[in-house]
Amino acid sequence: MSRIDTRFAQLRSENRAGLVTFVTAGDPDAETSLAILKALPEAGADVIEMGMPFSDPMADGPAIQLAGQRALSSGQTMAKTLDMVRRFRDGDDQTPLVLMGYYNPIYIYGVDKFLDDAVAAGVDGLIIVDIPPEADEELCIPAVHRGLNFIRLATPTTDDKRLPTVLNNTSGFVYYVSITGITGAAAPNPDEVAASVARIKAKTDLPVAVGFGVKTAGQAAAIAAAADGVVVGSALVSAIAGSLDDDGRAGPATVGAVTDLVRDLAAGIRGAANGSAA
Image 1 (tube, rainbow, N blue to C red):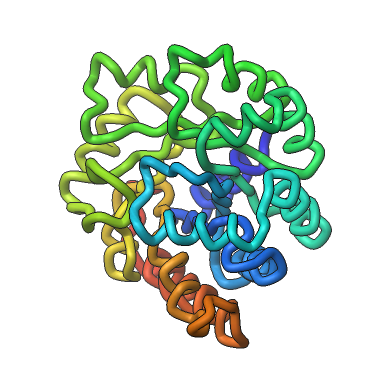
Image 2: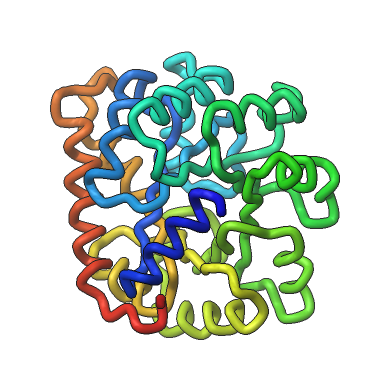
């Protein structure tokens, strides 16, 4: 089993949902970003998504767009992102780590080289938001052949006719986008999320993680009652932004600003009634 499979099996045995945290590689600079990455598991992150910075992140809201800009301005590259994964793996061989982003930086890097280097670095899965299932031969199939989980997005507009296509070749977990629009734009409705998660689960045995719009421990707890995982991203990158000085530089409080919020979110999830997440 992959690290992702193992982690969700562990979560089922604990009868709780997992906290999936998103941060952007290189935000606000490489060393601070690595320090945040290394601190996430102890703070309560069960799975880590790490964004690959891109200059045109069409699905992301202002907070994650700005995080990407900060990372690119500080000199983050795909090679440096993969090196961050290697350095993370030096001290953590258990926590699943998923790279999330857009196809363009992968295409520029070279698909085969990227996949080989990602596997060598210790990446467990990919979420590529702008490649549809109809283009699986481009990246998905080669990734799966190398042992990477390819995690697909389902949305409120993914109807029953489209859902089987989305689920085809998907592994690790399904990422349910709880709202229409960009990241961080609105708060999800727990009742609507529960109904959508149940609909997806009727079609797959994969875990379902829910993201977009979750910012507080209370929201995370409400979503955790129905989902196998709760994804938080914009709130974490906003915590980074709020800790920076007037020149956009990290300070002594930057790592703690993220880990304090992660601990709060994790406590909310662990305190939720997780019967349906088992």
